[in-house]
Amino acid sequence: MNEQISAASLYDRVARVIPKAEWMGFQDDVEAILELKRKRNAVILAHNYQTPEIFHGVADIVGDSLALARKAMEVEADVIVLAGVHFMAETAKLLNPEKTVLIPDMAAGCSLADSITPEDIALLRKAYPGVPVVTYVNTSAAVKAASDICCTSGNARQVVESLGVPRVLMLPDEYLAKNVARETNVELIAWRGHCEVHELFTADDIRELRESHPGVTVLAHPECPPDVVEAADFSGSTAVMSDYVGRERPARVVLLTECSMSDNVAVHHPDVEFIRPCNLCPHMKRITLGNIRTALEENRHEVTVDPAIAVAARRAVERMLEV
Ligand code: 13P
Ligand code: SF4
Image (cartoon, rainbow, N blue to C red; front, side, top):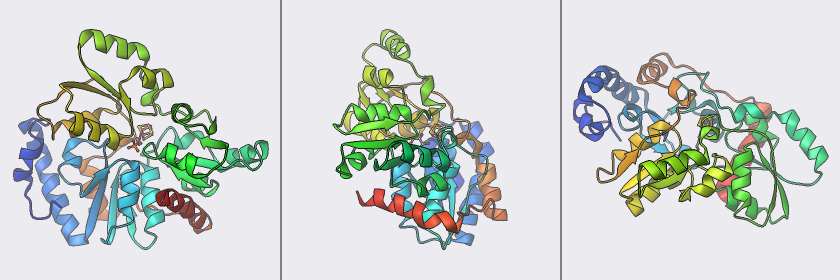
């Protein structure tokens, strides 16, 4: 996508959210990454929470977790660099076992993925015999392999209802499960996992925002606590929030989610005022232009999935993509 573009000409895209002096510091890495992508026949998949110099500067494919999984299946390049967190890179590898998948920092984890193990799922299956297990993609490949089907925040209700059963174990995000439970007649049994970024938002934050910024439209990610989602005007995955802003063009908006989202969406909507209380994801922020460049130069860190779990994990992801 960026192949014939120079770093200097790319600045126009991000001028609204990156000061020129800061961009000058990025230019060398951007030029080097564009060249390395050509040389290595590589593509960069970037999540909506990546910083704008990555998202708008070097990424080929951007989106929410669902879009990244879907688009990972269509990649024809030899190398995929996942600018996001480890579970996303594992999902890309599951769907592209023959390709080299790199993550610039192996420590880019996720509090939700850390909250549950395959052993926990085995215990839950004993406690709830015959109840299908739906796991959020924010989990390890081993947990996916122990599940019946995956979901993302963009398709959770559809996945749960596609099973045609009255009761489902929906793991590991307690708040996502409770938020989806309000939209469906299927009984959802939840786990106690939380996103360390979204659990920090409160309904009081929303009340204060509405007082200090009259007329503001409040969008909340479904990983937020249920009382926050209830107090918001709209809730959806990162891609759904971005689409909402493009469609509805609210005069003032706040996105209760990770901080880079507003920057990335604001680039396309100069007419919308973005109010910026937000929370940083320390895992997403481990990815930088510098370590993307090193990943491509030194072919690191290669993501692999144990063949003993890869088939079952891939099946759970593919079942989701078929819904
Ligand atoms: P989505 O982009 O699928 O909404 O996920 C948000 C998230 O927290 C990913 O880590
Ligand atoms: Fe995990 Fe939350 Fe960070 Fe997403 S924002 S990677 S769910 S900790």
